Length: 343
Ligand SMILES: [Zn+2]
Image (cartoon, rainbow, N blue to C red; front, side, top):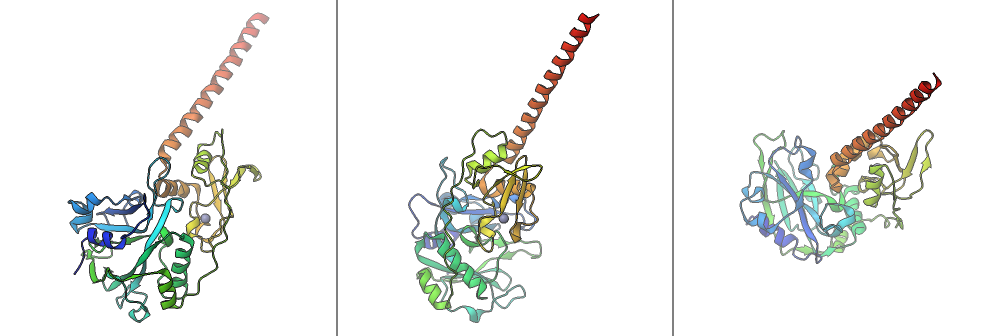
């Protein structure tokens, strides 16, 4: 009755937009101690679902993303909003009667397509969508409404909406608090049960928030800048206006927060990049975040090689210092020559 991960992916992603890819990640280290890079993930290749791999071994943490993604202009697929293609499944977490379960079974109003026990007595129910949902905002509003109406458990920031990772039916959960590791159990599997978002809205009586205001986000392109991170933010379409603003002692530019998906109000203003490597976002989740966090985020979610950028800053700095040294040496030599002549 329990599907393999390949059968599962084939059923859940029965139809996907042409040219888009299923995304996931898998690793053997406990999720709560694994280095950030493990969450980076990549396209789930059919080969790794068929051949011996972490996805088939049954002894690794295995996650897929609820949506598919398009490649960027360089052909690379990332789990980011800008590359969203369609959401294919909606999941409800933390169901059950176990100690870590937050939502009781009687909250489930629509027979799920699958139920996976992802930690002891704690289940995730999923609804396979009959038609992939290409409206990310609508999908997010349905998920938000489920959470706000107490029908789904609030998830970790960073795990919400269209880019979230959820667990495969075959795999383990070896968070350090589970000893021995919890082996996933697929409790129900009804791939023939497919639903429209409207079916879910109706069954749960969801009150959706109004559509997010559509910002005609004119991401500015910043050329000829000496600040490689500003250039990088610009390349990612995260710079909102190219105008440098005076921040009192420093210059700053308005950007789209790299965590804007997690802003509870989904409002995209109130974030600045400070020239030279500074960051401030006024949204609740981000208030304590520094540029160091931004670098980690750029590496993990946007595929930016921050080590290379830092190296190039170091080199640019060194070159500047060398030019300065040359200038000083020249001045000193000239002075020496003048002194010589003066004698
Ligand atoms: Zn933010």
